Length: 197
Image (cartoon, rainbow, N blue to C red; front, side, top):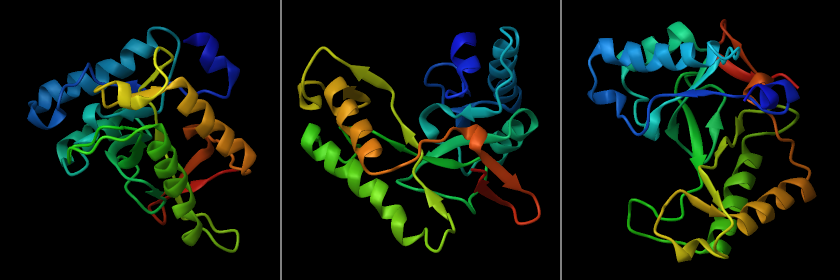
């Protein structure tokens, strides 16, 4: 982990244990999950400023948000194709690349790639005249090289290596700039995020 954090192109974030739903924990247990996640990384020389809420399901839970705010500058805490910069910095929405959805739909590589491109390009209508108001925050969970298409698995968070490569090539070929959370700032006066580069 230390090697990645020193490279500068990576940001190591903290996350609660496993798939614990913070909404169903007592205030003391939330404090433990959030605070000890930070302490574990500090014990290894990494002072992270970002927390990812397990399952991204506590964006409306003020106890969770207030606890996160004691330890971190930002939190990924919800799902959204785009993250609007005027959003709560402790409820940043993540575009999770899940090919099996809660609505029962399942997608193959081609369909996932089309959804990826559509989500990325949906920001264009919000970002004009040099003003950035919305960006995608893309979350990958499991990149697998063992099979050629995501339709081969029922693990919703799996992404095939060739799909991941195609998506990264799209970003490169179309002039997208990849940033980390270190490139985000927070304007306390306007209660909004901004891109620092």
